[in-house]
Each structure stands twice: as C-alpha cells, then as structure tokens.
Length: 407
Image 1 (tube, rainbow, N blue to C red):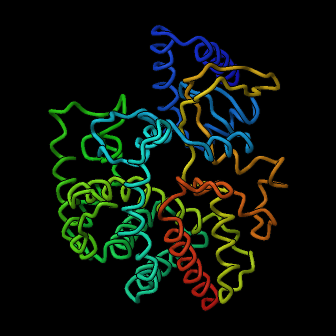
Image 2 (image 1 turned 45 degrees about the horizontal axis):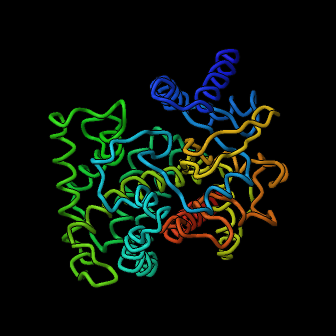
C-alpha cells in the first residue's frame, strides 16, 4: 500500500506539472480512485497515511494537497478561483444555485462583486440576527435532549447508536435558529434523507458529484426532497420577512435556494461533524469550568482544530506556485488545482506545538484555520461560525452538567 501511495503521488505530480487534455483525463482517473478510497477509509486515515509517507504536502485526488500551514493560510487569504470543487469532490456546476458562494469566488478573482453581494445577503438577513435565537429555550432544550441521549449511551457515547439523534437535532436546531422554523416530523425526516443520505439519488450533495451523480432523468427523488426543503425555507418567518433591495437583490426564491445548499452542505454536515467530535473526542478527564464561557469555547475551538469538520479548500492557482513535497521543491504552472487542507494545516507542528495533544489553553489557538478564516482576511470565513461555536458550547455544557450529576 505504501508503495502504491508513493507511486500515485509521483505520477500525479508529473501530470499536474504538464497540463494538457491527456493528462487531465488521466488525473480524472486518479480522482475517482482516490475519492472512493478517501470516502471508505475516512479522511483522517487517507490524509494521515500520506502525510506520514510524504510530508505536509502531496499529490492526491487529482490535485496538490497542502498541509503546510503557511501556504494553506496564504491560499485562504487570497482571492480564490475554485471552479466546481467542494471538499474532496468534483461537482456538476449547473446543479447548484448560480449564487452558490463557493463557485462565486471565481468571479471575485475577476473583480466581480457578485460573491460579496450574495454573502452580504445571507449574513445580514439570516446569520447575524440568528445568534440571538441560540439563547431561546427551544434551542437550548434541543441540545439538552441530545446531551441526555448521549449520556445514556456511555462516556464517550457509541456514535452508531445516536447518529440519528445527532442528525435530527442538528436539523431542528439550524432551522430554528437561522429561520425561526419548526419543521414537522415529516419535514425533519425528508431533510435528514436529503442532507445526510449517502445515496446519490436522494442526497443533495452526492447527486451533484462526479462520478457518483445520477443522470438528470434519475433525479426525481432528490428533486422531490429539495422541493420540501425549499418550501420550508421560503415560507419560514425569516425569509417571509425578506424583501429584495439594491444591496441584496436576490429574489426570495433565489435566497431560499442559496440557503438550502448552504444549510445542507455547511450548516448541517459541518455541524454534525463538530458535534460528533465534541461528544467523543474531548478527553473525559479534561476539567472544564462550565460557568466560564470563554473556557468552554476554547474547548470547542481545540476540538475543531484537532478534528476539523471541514478539510479541503480547493483553489485554482493564479500564478506559478512552488511547493515542497517530500523535501523537494516542485513548481506547478498557473491554473493548477490545489487543495488547502485545513485538517492537516491545523496539525502543522511548526505552528502548533505537540499538535496531536488536546490543549485548549494554547496561546495561538485562534490561529487555527478551522472556519476558513486567517488573520484579518475573513472574506470567506464560514458565515455560521458564531452559530456553530455557540451550538457546540451549549451542547458541551449540557453534557458536562449531566456527567457531574451522575457522579
């Protein structure tokens, strides 16, 4: 296996250094092989094995994976051309909203303001007002119920036993906090299938991913589920109050479509990953003052650094770029597909001392790239960062309180 990984790395480097129609076709083959392996063995094992053999940077998934903190941070801070890539996946662009924020980054590179306008709309209309809703009794009760369920399934809990509960809680919490919506049991079930299913014909994300996506004729089920979700979003209290302006000129339907895809891919999938880590990866003997909200937040941030909810930020380079791979400097032409890997960059031992240790008291904890943010360049910082941090903090407090009471 190690020999195959090293050979694959060398071949993909060579192909990326000499772009043409033939090398692009061969790289698509490597993408298919690697994305299947990545999905089967888990991101941690896929990336960790290659990091162990090849260092912080290497070739995989038909691109150059960057785990070197300084270069990953540089890519995140600069204007990005991203094209049809999300995480490890290569996507079908016309199955996304034309206002989809990741792909609008391409226009930002060309000086277009469409990205900033769409981002401003969802921030000002939805995300900024939503933080107050995290303090509602209903929001806190959802997390308290999940903490109760988790507590009854061990310390740490068996995730297989409570996976369904985590997903349903995430859906209800996100819809309540962001949209002031309370989906019915039928709607929750539909959204759970749409957001979390691994079946291409019913998953919002996988139905848009090459080579797994079904043909247009076989999209009926995912389209039916998307219609249920769109109806819920467009008729929610928050979106019902929305009126287009010169600054925010998306129609109500356009805003709803954009929100659906943002909520599904970042809001629910990302939040589920974070909650799963908080429930199982925080050392059970770690002392936490639950009355000190800053201390609790630092535990959430260290969990996100140590177990990143999101890994790959894909970027098309705008200039020739030099990268050190396996102790050798290599140059790649303009237009090369790179992936700034947050999970690996957050474990770079030149930045984070003893990176595998769980230490929420790190002096430079805020330097972690977990929410696609670096320094003051936060043009693409996750719009829901404050919501995710608050959700994680409240769940951690609820869980710790139940643990203390049981003792």
